Image 1: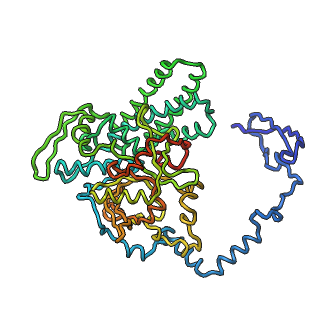
Image 2: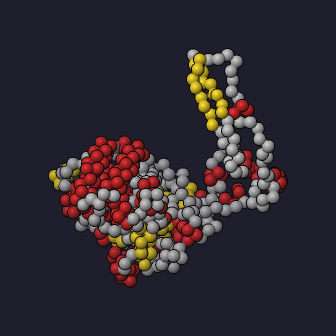
Length: 511
């Protein structure tokens, strides 16, 4: 047997009050010696240094403050009651307002002619933007083909987004290096923190569909990594960070454009393999067979996915004809101005992500006009705030936090201040399918098709008040035919570039 024996040679140097003692230890391996022991006291002799009290610091938590807070807590019986309840239940469920539940229903003034079936489920992935868009596109498609149920393949667009976005990221690494951005600077650090995520924006969807087309879900079904993308993303992120180092090193040697492009192509060969293994590789051509409502057999194909979009979908839903309007009320953001986000996108050479900033009341007016005409509306919001998840209610009054905690949360700050102080951001995309208006034509509530399955709300549908959207809604996509010319002209302006980490870009970082 062997034991580790320390032969201590401790040399003390009083360098400063922060580093009073420096010591070194030599150690050797010997046979076990009986009665040998080394204690903490042997290695770290006691010193005469005393702990400085914080009593005189007005910002420190002192025993006196703790005693006062404790007495204040127990002097109020309601606190004890709330503690007893919240220690056994979800605090947000405790705060649910019974009256809000009683006053919520799914009856609306205007509703799209036929809602999509089946209710979709993105499961453990951040593909809400794809699901919401494809749920929107399928409505006129199902009507045209006279079918009861249909889903476009979310996995198909997810596949191409992964391929394209990894390539886009590697090109961003080259672009930022050529800008002179340092690796540990805020921009490159932000990019490296999440090289590929599942979220996205409308313009990114347009890039995918106009380049790669669409497929029915029956022709390219889901895989494990479609429904639970975390492991695949972990593999991709590891390789992308590794490749970032390789590219940065390459650029220090002043390579030619062809040399850089060749290196990225080489890297993308490995990325293609990883994504193909996890998600499958779509067929270049397919044939889709189906029954219509009359039980008659129908068939489309063989066609390419792009031909399928161009011939079967585009005539009734042209994704290029939709425009993205946002509401960003921060003082630094101006209405009637276009914005984009630095390094945000998914296809090299593709369409730029553009936001047209408008007052939130204008967004609601255009949503109502679209729904009255029977066209559903894709939108982005911060879904988790003032949200009764199980009941499917988005309402500013659905939680009464002040009743339970004596303080309110989420709404004391203005919408602008929530964006500035990190309390709000776009996190989820869904689909408006119905609207209720009052006698003046103002929007009162909206019906929302979500992509979380049938377990929440009314078989997957939510109810959202207009007041909730004003606070936590940020973006809508509207057909150009419903948008006034003066708003469309804003898209002709040169966009202001927001930093990559701006909250207006967070929907594309959803996981």
